[in-house]
Amino acid sequence: MVAKRLGVVSGFFLGLVLMIGVVQAGAAGSTKVLMFYNPPGTTSGVGFDASNPNAIPPVGSSVIIRVRLQNVGSQFGKPAGATVGRVLLDCTVLVVDTSAQTLDGICSGIAHVPDGYLTFVGNGGFGSARVNYYAITGGVGPYANDRGEIKVVNNKNGSSVATVTLSS
Image 1: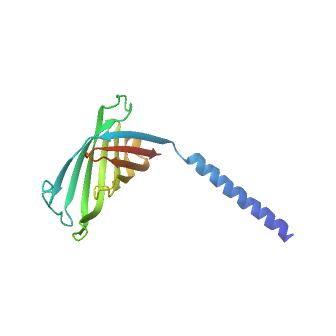
Image 2 (image 1 turned 30 degrees about the horizontal axis):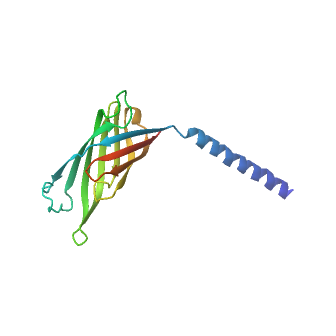
Image 3 (image 1 turned 30 degrees about the vertical axis):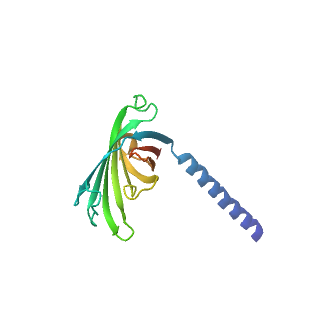
């Protein structure tokens, strides 16, 4: 009798787990990918002279980076190569290690595109990594409920290619 009850309870829990998995799979939204080429941007310093290559930004200062977004392929009803938006990135210096000649901090940004904008965070404005990642935190318009990531591949000439993967 106990074995029979355990079998019924186990079957109930197994069914519940399977049902939750199906509901979660059904709730998973669509994925949208946007790709941009970013010509070299402009950099400004707040609290230090960013035009001086020997300047060491102090803790609490900011690096402001402005970048144009150009289509890789056709997006937003515009052809490949068309400028379709811009990015503003505000990177706050949280740690300065003069012995290792490194900075670290947090960058928050906004990407303006024709049908709205995306907000994102990461630390990609610091260091010289070939690839940087940012977390998408939301946005406006069709991006209001989106999450995802931005992968930026940096080129030696200061340009980059960004792949934006959105999930709603």
